[in-house]
Amino acid sequence: MKISKIAVATATSAALALGLAACGSSDTPAADKPKADASASGPKFAGQTLTVWRLGAPNEVFEKYMTDLNTKFTEVTGAKVDLQWVPWPDAQKKWTTALASGEGPDVTEFGNDQVAAWVAQDALADITEVAKGAPDFQQIPQNLWGYETIDSKIYAVPWGGGTRAVLYRKDWFKDLGIEEPKTWDDLRAAAKTIVEKKGSDVDGFAFNGGSDANMSLSPFVWSAGGDFAAFEGGKWVGKLTDPAFKEGFEYYTGLVSKDGVSGKSRLNLNSVEISQRFAAGKVGMYVTGGWDIATIEEQSKGKVDADKMGFFSLPTKDGSGPAPAFQGGNDIAIWKDSDAPELAAEFVKLAAGKDFGVRYAKDNGLLPLYPDALAEFASDPAQKAFADTFKVAKGFPADPNWAEANDTKAVLQNAARQVIKGDKDVDTALTEANKELEEILNQQ
Image (cartoon, rainbow, N blue to C red; front, side, top):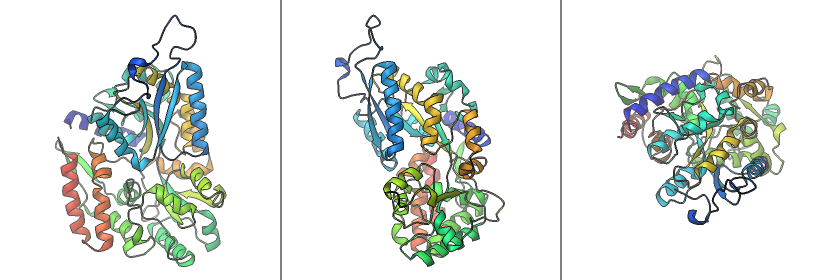
């Protein structure tokens, strides 16, 4: 981990907060692939195949988007697309395996906070010239390129921005006379009412302890004035033992350990698994993004449709407004060992260009990054929670090793489980977690 990279990432992360998660291009050996022939008729890349990894669980909306994108790509280039869907919780393992085995994609989707970690492992291609040479990309505000730019080089293209809010059963709220929570006390009371009326096997406010757990924890921490770590004096200093962090952490874990609004037997579930329980009528509220609406409708076979779901911003403790949530987004990048980098660049330019880029964001429940489309999005009452939250959104430590602390080592997830189960008191759990977090973030 180079200090220069940390410094750039920290600076760009701050800018972002002001402004607003191997070779394998085909089964055919590279030597056997058709070569581009300028004198031949037809598109330049006719006969080639590009391997593209999309993250998440495919549904009708996502598949329609990819079908249209791939059809247009083939029309323009002559090449075909080998599309592979990778569940978000499996992505880290998939990329790690690809890096070690050489059996990776040509193009892959990424969470924007993960780019630095994979650049540090030399997994992504430098696409500075591609990014700066595409006219559409020049319309994306410069402050939205922070996660993607390291040491003045660009390694990914922003595809869609986003933050998270609380998805809730709007029909349950109406039936039970619950108003949208405006304070922490309101949230606790609403969750308890849901459990009391719907049964103990229902989570009033589902606890997330999986790979994306900190998406749910962070709004409570940030709105209390806390943070995970800060870059001070040339190194990362953990902030998990600060009173403000402790306040948010205690409230969130207390929803399970003290208030019983989420089952202790479900402390390892991630948002994908929670959404499945939501579709089955077993969750009243949880933190997620707009992309879950279509998936839940499909999984519930229409029993939980869009009319029964709504979003609200997680509130601050005192009701002063929306709590800051993760300043997220998804990127698209070229795998460094792709043997078809020029073709991969054509896919990236098409996918993240204005037409398909805006559609990608909207279809995935994300914020479009092109200014005119974003302004239109913010005027939609159905998106108010995300627009309001996005104004105060924040980022996790912009360090290449954050993914290890967040995903691989699950530092905060383990601390939360220890506290909820009564294995450790809050002070002990956070002191130990803080030490581990500092060691991980400051690895060379």
